[in-house]
Length: 292
Ligand code: MG
Image 1: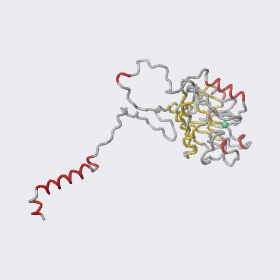
Image 2: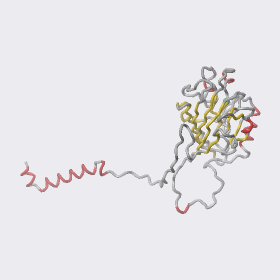
Image 3: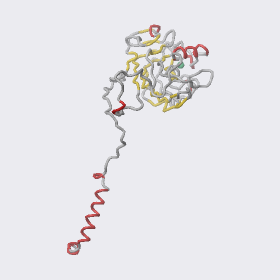
Image 4: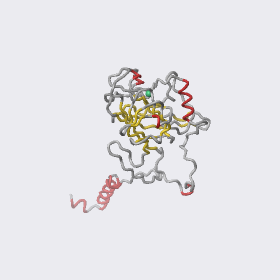
């Protein structure tokens, strides 16, 4: 056999060509496909310990004071936590797409039932409520229990801890987009983890939270985060937020470098309010029962 191959030039060439084909098809020779998008290096973020704020988070409450909240002086401060009193409170800063961390505890002393037990809420953009309720062995309508998108979607599971125990809510929120005419371009989306358990997964928000009428959308821009006072002394601690840039890390082309003095920061696709969001939402709240 050996003698036969040695004697055949064509057979040797065929063998080499076959080997080359094998090599070209092997992972060692493969080229990585490149999208061409000029990604910039993701910034380094130092994670927080024990649900603490990461290094790039905006701390909204660290147990010391509620100074960054409008109405925060109306809530009661105790050893490292706040208790809902008197009125809703809103961040002075306005937000759109966010990762939000909130810790709460339902009153240890159980009073009331259904929606009247440990009721509060986290309103994204002052409008879209993730319900806070004492849902430990407490019957109510499913789309109104703890971690529901209030009056729109029940949580996937009930991951509530007993009254008095601290609980975490981790909320991922995509703001709605409106076009120049104020028409809805894309709805809001919500994902929520309660105590580390996925309870709302990429829910398409149907519109503004209402108690006595269907949800709807009206064009608005970035708006405060609101914590609800619903008459129950719900406790809060360790609240922080990270603003999400939906198209992160893309280097601008050289001829489109940002100006030295950037314009008023605006979220792409969001239209500014005709009136302040807080006032607008307050009017709405006044017009209807606050059973949320
Ligand atoms: Mg509520």
